[in-house]
Image (cartoon, rainbow, N blue to C red; front, side):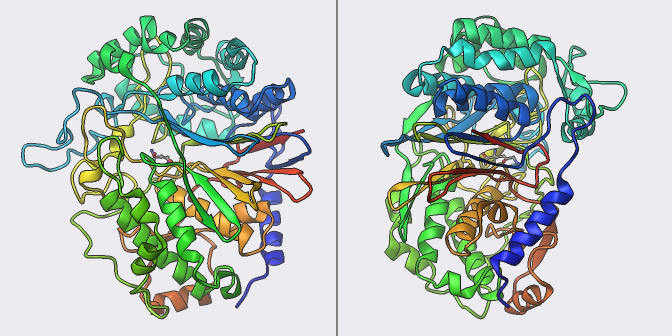
Length: 572
Ligand code: DON
């Protein structure tokens, strides 16, 4: 059965209406899931941050200015994932079409070793790479944002970009229901890993509308405002980080901090029909995987197969399975491992990967490796921000602490959470990480190396002009979400809102199962797929897209995902 885009659109709209919330008394903001603008647009995971971005754009700041201001704002108003203690990946397309990416992913500390998460019998020590001080990679966010601003900022003073974040931290802001729920979930972990001096710990449960003040974070942000990079990687903030490491058995040193540098890289690009995909190179796995998926799809009549029919779902699943198998073997930090980027993206190679594709039956993934049981968290928390400015510059930037509140370690005195990004390395070949992803040599731990990421900040051109800006949080499911949203727009004829809000499915090679969001795929389609040999695992939700589409008349359509009540699009 072919489901018409109008039907999808109706379902998505009713879901949206259903999920729209009234502004509770005193909260001071309401999320706006969808917006149009004739000039500029920002979509971020929080209304207060999007509003900061919109104001910067309206004052004449460019897309980088807005992205920097938004990142600092979400480091305060979205503590579960917004960060200065994590890292990120940024793709910039300038109005004239020049493209570049900035890698400010965390790095393994100098004292990190390949087997640091294994016991004497070579088994993974549960929790060591995900919680507490040893899980932390050297943060890259502050260095990255400053580097982006220095090279591509639009002329507004840096102090003006960071000030809204300082104000939110100093004066406080009202927490949303979702943030309150997350803060309540992690109270025990906050107590376990931290000293008493923690504004997130509360004796009674957090409630929507509670005021959260972060005075230590405000002071840290002021040091960054006044001293730039050295306000974080040197001086008092660096001392606080190293003292925190010593207190909890972590290994990051002052040298690790002062040595940290972000890296400018050429984007991974690829064409799909009359579209051009501009996306992130390693240490993201997402860019290569996305271009592989799009190029594979080019050989099949996807539109006529229909949206989420057995035929199209099977085809996309089989492509995803093969691409994630490549990810596990071949992808890692290019500065440490020779990633065969060109070969992986060659049409001939991709055709050969699909040579054993059987339209009637699932190809079983290679034998499931020991312990390959996905333990994918139900709540995906990373941040993505998409921006288009008045000149037509576009920024797609994803930043992360990895898990909710990262390692749960709050830097005593400095007031921010540190990431648990070390879990994105392959701690032992073939043993899955918290997203069920396996890896090997390419993504083994080494000092100074960056852990592989699934973050896929992406920009799409159509006929040489800006068309889509998108990305998402969601661990391993980010790549397939970006892939499916692009196809929903380009092949299945959906408007952006329907494309973002439509249900999604995901296969990552191991474990050999199709993850599917509840309510996605009709019972008949599922039955047909089961007959072909697919097995399903239902989840509440997967990656959370934030996207902007430039419509043919130049109007910008911004869309936040129904999956995160705080997602917010604003433009003018
Ligand atoms: O870089 C990555 O692939 C992960 N650290 C992203 C984590 C994420 O999206 C959080 N979701 N649960």
